[in-house]
Each structure stands twice: as structure tokens, then as C-alpha cells.
Image (cartoon, rainbow, N blue to C red; front, side, top):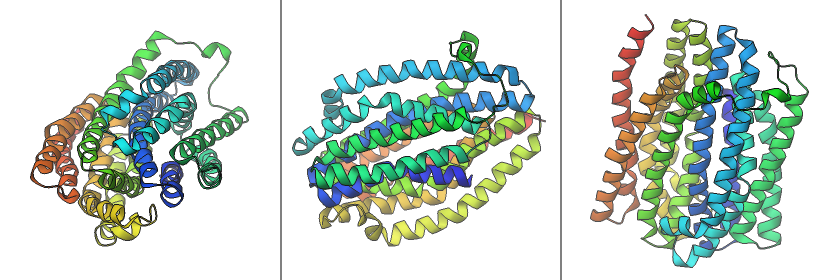
Length: 424
């Protein structure tokens, strides 16, 4: 988990450094543009990451069963399949940038900055997808250290890129987007060099780089429900962002800053979720079910310890955390108010994310999809919409998230009894 956590931390630094540098060297309009644009791009990237979980789980289960001859074909099919997805997303974001910014209710004063961020990051989707598929391959092999090394190098490059494009060239949101894409390109190059120099536990040749329908179906069966769930959950947060954007630039920028802080707060449960999926997949493939249950138990306990610490920091010292990303007092006040509601979720996601990682590794991705959709559309959006009608205070609107998480945990507990009967 620790290398995965470190890699997620550095990956979160991409967007965080963008916002931090823009917040100190740009305008509130630039901050709003990066906030709205990065949330949209993060949603689409999360879909790709979730889809790539199909490769991680399929590869892990094959290695656990000793079916190494099939692993090379799985990786080759995954690379070609996700290459096609990347091309489609590139055209969608570049040519649909104005429509996407409009759907997000980007404030008029920050509309240009939002479209610039979306189009530049969209042009680099092939790089973003390549990074995620390479990471899924390494994790499927049980190697979480190599992606950490690659993303660490890229994170340093992104920091220098942001400082150059934003503070020196004064490119604002566009400069932040350009720095992010170039940094991830470097990450992909490093990953390719590292994977070419290591011996793999399976045969992989140029002939493996062709889509095989049987493998595509397997990847889709595992990855599509996860991806659809993450997409729809991401859409629910985009809906909330669109609701808040109507409150003005300060509220929009404030939520963007708070979301960046939340991105770091949620790193620990996210790391447990990803590492648990690979670990559980290999053990279930080897029919070692008891080890899978122990992993879930230990993961929840460890994650909860971090959750208590994150709750304390974000609830009582949210203004200090948000102050790292902007110097605007009005934006900090809005961000800290929103973050207080999110702090409650710190105590809940340690349960939810560990359960999701367990069910992903077990191949129960249809359930993962169902519980995510129920939480997003039956709880999170209705609560956020209702609160926005009653008050303009971001704390009450933000309460929609912990309300959704509680509902999803209840569903996961009910499902756990069924899974234990299945593997006994």
C-alpha cells in the first residue's frame, strides 16, 4: 500500500501544484478555470483508471492461477483497447470544450480560462491513458514501486513547468494545463524505459499488441461496471460543482481549492483500495480466501487511524490547509466551510474504500457499480440540490457526500455476507 500511497500523493500533486501556483501567481478567474477544468478532467481520467482495473484484476487472477501464458495477451489487448479510448477522449474534449464548460456552469469571467484548461489537457489524453494503463500493468504484477518512481520524476517536472509557464510566462490556467501534460509525458517515457529493462513472468511480443475479443470481454466484464460507477459518481460531483458555480467565482474557486485538499485527504483510503484489489485478486485466484478477508479487516483498521487524523486537521484547521493553495481570503473562507463537511467523510471512507477494493479484487464489480450509482443519484445529488435551495452556505451543501457514503457502507455490509457464502 505504501508505494501506491506515495504514487497517488505525487499524482495528486499534479493538480495541487497547478492550483497552488495559479492561486499565488494568477487571478481568481484562473483559479476558477483550473478548479472547474481539473474536476472535469479528473472525472474522465478516473473513468480510464477504473477501466484499467479490469487489466489489473484479470492479470492478477491469471498470475495467481499460474496462467502466465495468457498474461502477455491480456496486456497487449489492454494497450490497444485503451489506445482507442484515448483517441476518442482527445477529440471529445478538444472539440467539445465550450459545451463542457457550459454544462459545468463555468462563471462567465472564468469561461475562457476553463476552456483553455480543458482543451490543452484533452490534447494530452493519449499520454494520460498511457500512464494509467502502464500503472495497472505494474500493479497487476504486484509491483507498486516502479509507478512510484516514474510519477515522482514527473511530479518534479510538473512543479518546474508550472513555475515557468505560470509565474514567468504568465500563461495562467493554460500554462498549468501545459505543464501537467508535459510532466505526464515524461512519466510515460520513464515507465516504458523501466518496463523494457525488466524480465516479465510471461511472454510479450509485438504479436501480443492486438485486440482479442475474448480478453476484451473479460476486461469489460471487470472494468466496465467500475468505470461506469466512477463516471456516474464523478458526474454527481460535477453536478454539485455546477450548482455551486451559480453562487459566483469565490464559491467556485473555494470548492476547487477544497477539492484539492480533499484529494490529499482521500489518498490513504484510495491507496488501500487499489492495493487491496490487486492483493485480493491474486489470493482469490489462488483460492486463498481467508487471506482476502484478513486483508479487508487490517485495511479498515489502518485506514481508520489515518481517517481520525485527517478529520481533526480538516475540520478544525481547514483554513490553514486551504491557505496553501490561494491567498484570497474570500476563497479560503468558502473552501474551509466546504471542507468541514468533507471532514466527516474522512471517518467513513476508510470503510467504504476498503470494501470497494475488496469487491473489485473479487470480481464483484456489478455490485460496486450499483452501490456507487445509488449513493450518487439517490442520495448525494438530491441532498446537495435540496441544501442549495435552503442555504448558500457550502458546509450544508457538502454534507451530501457523507450522507451518500453512509448509504453505500450499509449496502457493502449487506453484500459482504453474500460474498462469504460464495467462497465457503
